Image (cartoon, rainbow, N blue to C red; front, side, top):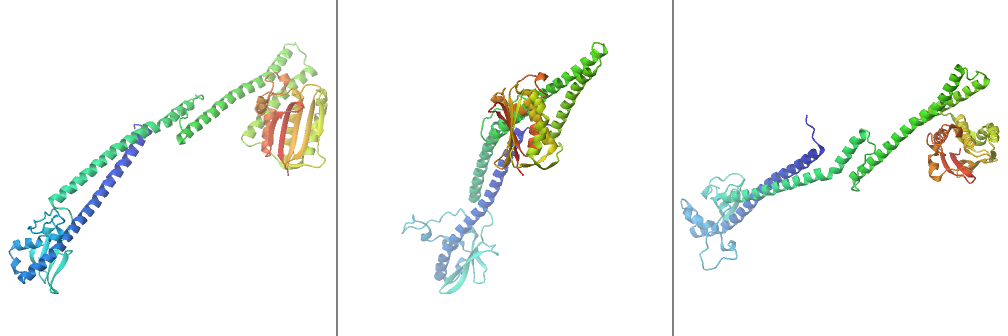
Length: 463
């Protein structure tokens, strides 16, 4: 089956609507015209009927009966002649009035009836529905003047007039159809052009061309469609780029510990390195790094689908934070960092998962240990702020460019742009922190620290 384009469909739809509208209007106009024209003819006939009555009264008074009309149509024509009052302003006294031309044919449908309503002269087929006017002479009804109303147009002049009107209606209707066809063609070709461009760009996008864009040429719904398409294309292009970067990052992060493990095992197999406690500790270190990377990736995948398990309960932030910080005191000291902990005197309760909060705080402290220069400081402050619990992690130099701060929570992103594992972890810690904070209904933000490093500001709802 041949595919019909949307341009053709729209053209046919608009044209069909216009044709149906013209046909309906033509039929309605014809029906209304016929009814109105027949009514007009009947009104003209009634005027002629009313004009005949005075003539009939005068003729009856002159002859005393209707016998002079029987088989003698000439006097009847004189009676049918309209009185001067109905001839118009052009009637001249002293001249015999000429018989007015009657194109309506009403004269031929007028009859004279006796008192028993039998036809004396005129139209013979007088039946039900006839319009009658009494002929009253000296207070006595001596007969009736009757006229059968028109049911349809039958006279030649009337039919010609009707046909001319219908012909004009059909000419106008045909011109309207042609105009509608032109407008339909314009709509189909011009207004649908942006839609067709969006459709073509969609095909390219589906084929993998994520750089495909559509020019926005208007501010209407079609223009909004183009803008939405461009936004979708930008999102897909960015997601594709992130997917490729993610695969490259994961491959890199896995390759390093696997390469170390492979080299250590080959060295032991060749007898270059002895299998002693130090070698085992080195292998365990690399296996631990692999395990941590896989665990972080698993946590992130669970957070993406909303399946990361949380067991929340009311808890004091001080009781959650202090054990985590104490566990890192020795490591902070070995890194040459001073810890400055400022906790409130009063409890600050949050509705949180204790295990996930420990993971959050541990990642943040470990991040400062890795990236803060020796001789620096890590300041941790907890306070109530605007009905929320504010938790701030601020460390000293080195800092990060302000343009890169929002990217700190992206996966595998490192502020210094290096892939040297000696400088830090896999770059997943802050991404996990963001997932944990958002799962608790809070916010997390990276800013420039007043100490010269990075300021991680966390805000959690207070219970």
